[in-house]
Image (cartoon, rainbow, N blue to C red; front, side, top):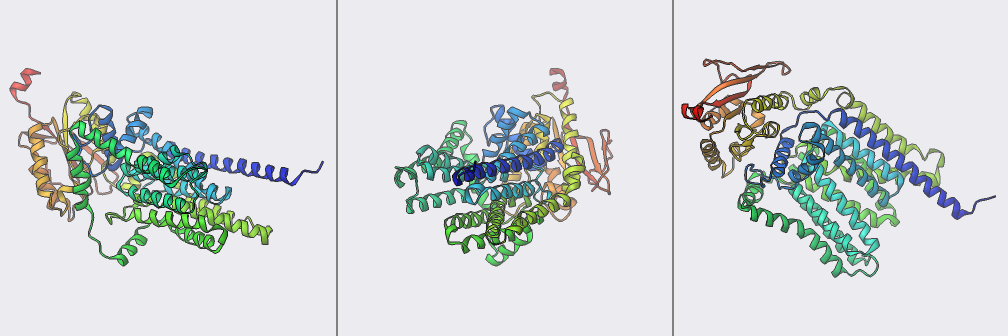
Length: 550
């Protein structure tokens, strides 16, 4: 019996849905294999900060009390939630990050399908997967930018759905999620602004959904956007840490940003610092935008895509630091536009040259395979320790685990320690509180108006707390100090270490950057200024009275 055209279209639609979901599952499986294999990889500094902040939250310690940070409390709170399910360990953090990354890939897939079609969704998901796991963006680490992208995409997807249903809870949820992206990292402000502009356009074009007025939609969206901030401000005020958090997240944040060197230089820095894995998708995205604008029927989608592309690029710029993982904020826009290019090109060829219509998908598949092959050692062969050394050189991330094990074995849970350097992961691993809120020492070395005051405050907090252990980190990457360590780091480490502490251990990294030697009995004549010594462990000299009390 011949099938009707309507039935054929329905079957075709269902088939398209099935194969696209199968492709998505394969992409998620690829990401799961890579991340599960590397889940024991030592935490780097940012991960250590968020993990320690999350650990404190789980212990009932509010933000800003034992850890001073420029970051807003959203990412530590997300870490705390993930660690509740997966545990307070490297594997727990990275397993939780796998969930975050896979959820973002699914959201990218759904947005691609809505904007252009099934091919666009699959290509966008695959493109984001390869970019977000790449070593070029330090993709093995659960940086705050991944959490910004997750919540921003969720908010925009719900906003697009709200324009179809016209339900105010959807507009509220959209504003709420976009606002949460700001709590993850300041850069999320750009996505909130973009969401507000999109809402304004929906109101102007009268596409807010059935029976929905712009006033009601706007009130719901703004209420959702304001709610997280009001809740956080209330909690910080009740905890008594509002003033301190405001100083670090707002006042100091202004001093942290570099001065603007001019638009031309910023654009050049942006392109020069862009990770290699994003180079081809960037130019594919430009072609994708061009293809959309050339089709009058896709101008509405082109307007949304252009705005999202520009906003994502601007989100990378604040502070003018252009670190590799900042470009994760741009990855979803590049992935979506690459997907729309593949979809539009395929649709064009299907109409005119059907035999060669699979070529766009084949070209993207080659890009994906080439990207995986280029980083096959990191993705499939290196051990977690080797991966850490490959991405971060001789920075003391693996050594932090060994040191924390020693501290746990030789101290009580009530003991505190001070890390002179930017290695908050040591606090997290050791499950010991910091004797000073300065879990990062970058601010002490920066040319900013609060540096000297911060040094004095850190020295006072350590002197008052008298922690059992003080760890000196004598590597410039932990202080962002050049020239070499001996010129600036040694004097400040000595000034921050009270006299009643003795050297009990050293960690020497030899010249080949792969050999590490621990010495727990260095002796009184040990040279603490030896450039190979990255970690120096000091213990407080216990008085006769303290020994009697114990």
